[in-house]
Length: 136
Image 1: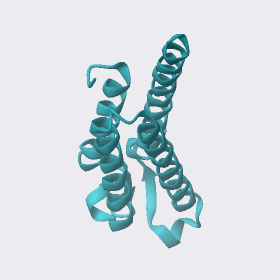
Image 2: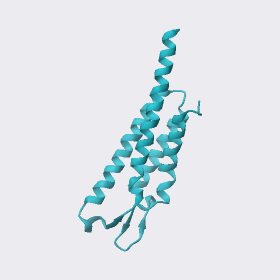
Image 3: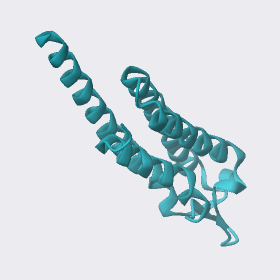
Image 4: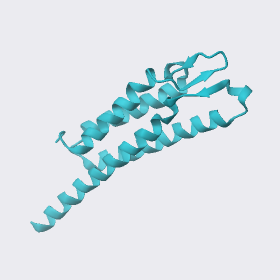
């Protein structure tokens, strides 16, 4: 059933990880040029991976355990991406050429929040199915 609340949360993660990084500035370099996800191959790959995992989890609605595992993997991937952003922003200023941080560095945090909400809803559904199976 694709009309569940976790599908909405996963769709929001797909939008946040798949579309927003190309329009939102990650940071500005020393010259003042805006850096987006396409300019950094590692960041682009991680955002694409996060979006792909969310799409697979969205269409794996018949297998709730797989959907839950994919959500956990996506949370781990977003934590790695967030750690990479923190590492790059806290390095010596001359090494990475980051002069001003952008709002795009907060996108993994927003994705993590929606993924946690989706996993809670998936577990709620799984517990409901288990309780109905006990009654039979």
